[in-house]
Length: 176
Image (cartoon, rainbow, N blue to C red; front, side, top):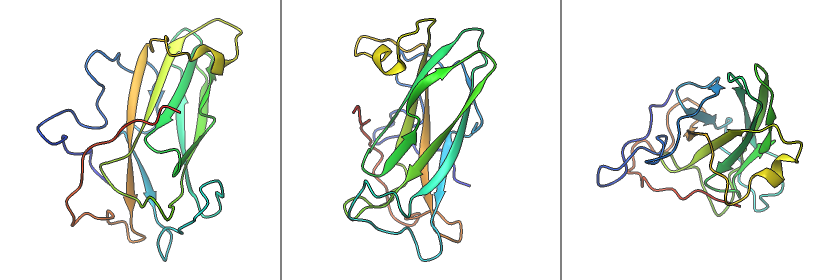
């Protein structure tokens, strides 16, 4: 398995750490090491020219359990919507219930798998509103919890892709 990402150049925070001032995640995730590892099938990750075609995608499950006493709404963002899909990306979780997300990676001819670059950010806050979840997530919303989970990529034999090459440690979150 892979370890957490190295600190960003210049000694900054790790990609899977919260930014200063961000609240700690209050729910439970079944992946406590904060890494989703996408292992390539024999022959490597299939390359596509059409990111909307999910044929050949490697899909993992990520379970989130609401361990709070309040109904929560969640939203998942990723660093690149061309190569990652999260289903469902937004929703509700009642107290003591769980939701299992499907997280898919699809290599494209534009973006290849690169370790220590990509992550998923899961945001949540409590709500009793009957408003659809998508309408609750406005630009003004302040999440009550944040968790980042790294994306790691392995060769079919389980070794990290590009482990022998220096990595860039920057990632911008795709806010679409």
